[in-house]
Image 1 (cartoon, rainbow, N blue to C red):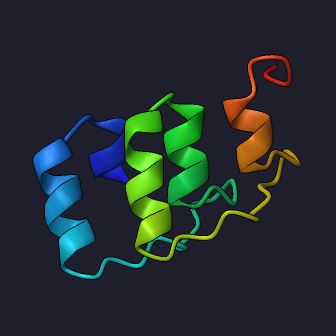
Image 2: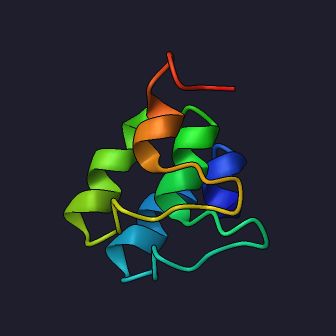
Length: 75
């Protein structure tokens, strides 16, 4: 998750290519896709989904990927 929010694209790609678990959640129940969406790292989301990341996760705030990527839904 550090690679996503820290803009560490080389580290992110290395982890992705080496089978990192993309569905691990942080203390807010954000998984990698939700975290990328929250930090507007939309460029990473398609790659994560292609590697098997969940698209249906919901965090502790009740936000889904759709909520965090849709400007009309953002808080």
